[in-house]
Amino acid sequence: MSMSDPVADMLARLRNATLARHDTVEIPFSTVKGEIAAALRQEGYIEGFKIVRNEPIDVIRVKLKYQGDLPAIRGVKRVSRPGLRVYSKASQLPKVLNGLGSAILSTNRGILTDAEAREANVGGEVLCHIW
Image (cartoon, rainbow, N blue to C red; front, side):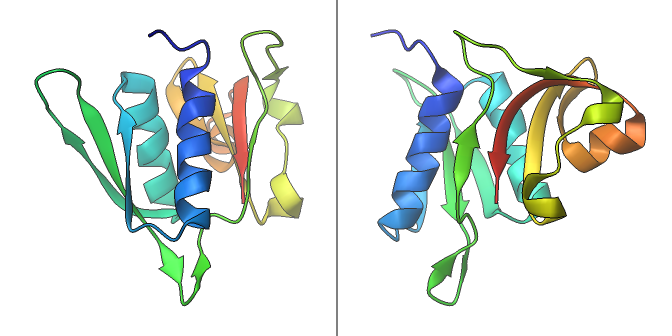
C-alpha cells in the first residue's frame, strides 16, 4: 500500500512511540527519512538510529531518548505537506519556541536544521517543527 505523506508517517510514529514510552521504533526506510533521523540525532532528540536491511522492506530503527521520565521529543508538527507546500527564504526562517525547538528544512544542500540553514544562508521547504 502506498503512502501519500511518508514524512508525516515518520513523525507520527516517533510521537506515538515516545508517548507509549517505547525504547525503539521502526520506520520504513527512505533517503529523506534517513537524513531527517540524522538531523534529529544531531539536535539531540534521539539517541541514534540504524538502517536495517530486511528482505521485504528496509527500515530505520530509531533509539528514542528520554531525560528521566520525560521524552526528549515533546512535540512534533508537520508544516509542509503534499497539499500545501511551505517554503521559507533564508532571511525568514522560522524560530520554533523562540529557539528552544528546531525546524527541519529540505534545501538544495540537503536536509538541514534551521540553525544550519541560517549559517549557510539558504532557504527551502519547511518540513516540520520539533521541540
